[in-house]
Amino acid sequence: MTIRALLFDKDGTLVDVDRTSGPAAWDVMTDLAAGNRAHLDALISCSHYMEDERRFRASSPLLAGAPDDYADDWAAALGQPPDAGFRRDLSQRLGDAGLRHLTPLGALPKIFADLESHGLPIGLATNHGAGGARLQLRQLGIE
Image (tube, rainbow, N blue to C red; front, side):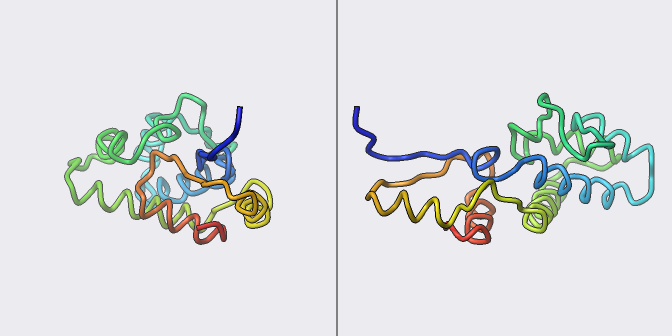
């Protein structure tokens, strides 16, 4: 069998999910809860988040889904309507926080340079939007 291309999943393969998404989600949840512990507890619960470890349980909808997949639950936790404005705001906040906490798994620029030197096409699979994924890849030095 000849390998003709490589396809990577971003989260958990290129990016440390616990050190990136966990702290990023915490920042967004605490910001949105605005000091209201009941709202924060509701966000933690519907996100399957472990507050003391600042990471998600494997069952978290945030690990396998995009913001549209859990925006209704977050809006309900905050007592807000799950309208398009809320969805845009949530997606933007999570994207910004994800960039602040972005933690690569390994020396990605070197690894990708080595792979590209073999002439292999490289692709990325992610459940996040293309724009946000490109921003993260750029910050990681592997766009």
